[in-house]
Length: 390
Image (cartoon, rainbow, N blue to C red; front, side, top):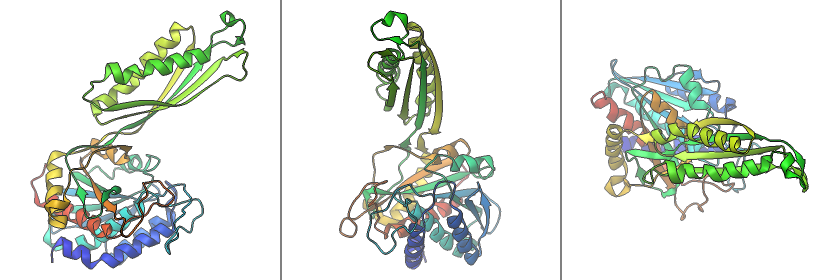
């Protein structure tokens, strides 16, 4: 029996377990009941497993002998979002919802665990099933890395169920797939005064405005036009009254790009412009820059393995090229420790489920995509373990 047939064999299980997780969503790094259920399911399958990163789980499937180690990752956390769907499996946890597909990722990986466990006498090497907490906050991947879960991993594969892609379609192409995400906070300190006598103060509001405008030159003048990048200011607060020169200003924004090189330069560029602009106006300034996630970039060789599996599952016509997205993924942090491959699996089918985007209160998926996801997880692991070590 091939991977596609095995995935189909466990289709009912995938739907049932996905609906359980959908009804019981939990917040990032608080996935305690989800963790418990995942471990119970792995125990039933006879798959060794242990807790990791607080509320995460790692399952281990060993083949016939020691060889390479491939990891398969699914994120488990839900969103702080009130579900508005009228379905039998609607969220039972007030204010929380699986509005991004992580319930399907968890279900898909558990189903893949069933498939791989049935085939463990047919491959050499080890498969790690990583059920990751805290993707939405960008903390889960780093927590697993800090605990050494990636130390022995040669390659890691992840999936995102994707409502912008038709059900029955898969995208596993090489190169950039999702953007980096940085957040920066700028604190400006000037000197207050009366609005009628601005010469007596240092106008923090004016300084903040100058910083906002000058930062736009990072993308337009310091980054190649061939490298897509975004620098946006989302918050600008200053002042308390119409005739008072403000003594403080606060700005907050984000950076996005698809290149590690561009991403690594953002902080220095922002710091330089912020400091020199403030100095020109006699103000003081402090920058706090945090890297939320790195760009998610697929390895070329791993993409070849994934492409082969995709064609076996959905045919040449279902294995599609799909435009990268400026959304971010903490899966990207794994690329510092192992080769990475990240796939989009289509879940859009308006004949079955009305379309809504990710993070919407009416978000839902075509559940036939769960079988595709399970097959892709399992197929990639086996294809990688068959190949030469990269």
